Length: 142
Ligand code: AMP
Image (cartoon, rainbow, N blue to C red):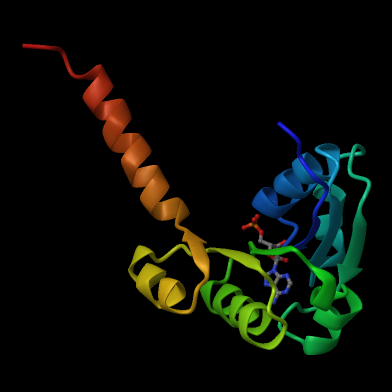
């Protein structure tokens, strides 16, 4: 199956964003990662071949610097649900980014994102499912 290269903007270069940025870059995509904290970029692997921008991602000029109007996809992966929601809305509504996916710790916010046409992944919900599954798997069969 072909895997055409995409232009992907990643917001947040912490534990999640740095790992994903490296994986996407290694898969052949063009990646720009934005983080407000310069030290966060140290988490990127040496395999990362994209660009970094140090700025608060909720500021429009940072998104413009990342050429958001040309992005195929934006991943909002900061540790702040409010920031992820705001940046996702800007990407979708102002810049018409075709695919926007956000990290939301609060599973109850999922509906808000979906109504805006933004995909959402809740690590909290994924963890709850994984723990339940691990528990079910370790229960003795009676
Ligand atoms: P982690 O929870 O380890 O995946 O880290 C989240 C990352 O999001 C950290 O590196 C933060 O510096 C970054 N971050 C949080 N708020 C913002 C923001 N407004 N703009 C850019 N990066 C942010």
